[in-house]
Length: 432
Image (cartoon, rainbow, N blue to C red; front, side, top):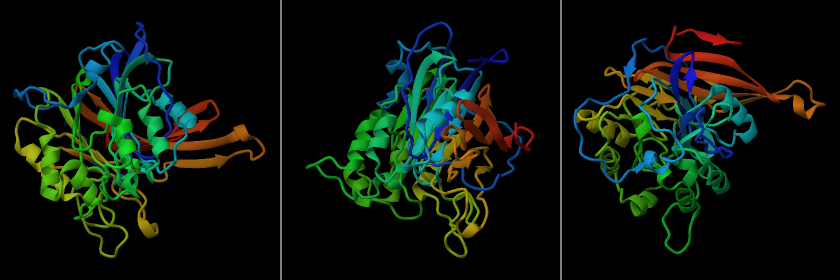
């Protein structure tokens, strides 16, 4: 997509229960390449004033081993999209921990306004947009007319961090059926009732995983060659903390029995990442080591004294990846930990920039929808405001991250609020 004379890519991160429509594939000249990753978990927490430094999205120029078995969208969509060098500008949209706060028509209008190209989901059946706990990662890669609303375009990317709902199979199926490039990871609510793996019948977890297929990135890697981007998934069904949630299910389905084995599965997924690809980690919950105060990005807000509720296996995996100079990890997206703290204690920090410039972003804004009724007598007069997190990068560098609220009133849409979390002028703007 060309905006103001420059080619623009978008990345969308979404987490929560969604209901998406299908996108038509076109190969006309006037098309916009988009990619969508869905991730459950919306932004959670207070705005963190990160430094203005630009973070490089790109791995060192060392030569990695050839790609292994991870899925690749470039081969799958070769006939539907025009493959070209990575766009100079990329937009990533994140929606976390939807928790059923999703409406296909309303959110489609909002996404059309945002002109997404990449969409990421972090799921957990209630579809909590990028909630720090469940990430359903889905990537959609396709070309379509600029006038067509789509969640992803080769210039946009969507992250979704699970928690679609409490094993809401139909909701997951509706998202999986979208004909767009996507990546998703199931969260704890997506395995709310299923505790073990059964070979006799298909439980709700199996149905959800089958629906997503290779687009579910839990313990796997999904490559997006046109964007020079690889998404690596964290541990599925995470609930945060020091214990494995749904331990029997993890053991039977993934052969994971403890945190060390889980960390190895995550880091091993990076093996064979294509040269010069940026690595983005999509998980349902964030890693340990980002603070233990109540309002920290993964801090316990439901007990006195707080505590670090991050995933130790994810922290270990990230450390292992960074220890290997072949790979860089510029961005980690997750949800599960809601922005609004328990007991009315205020907002949570939603972003942390590490000493090595790795950005940790929580997209669990819950609830992600504000409802208004300007005229109760008219069904068409109902207005909603819907939350998204936008990540804008240029020439491989993250320049701006903003919590964005889009007002939808019938066919009228506009950006109502924008709270800058990183980059820009670090100023909050509203009523744009």
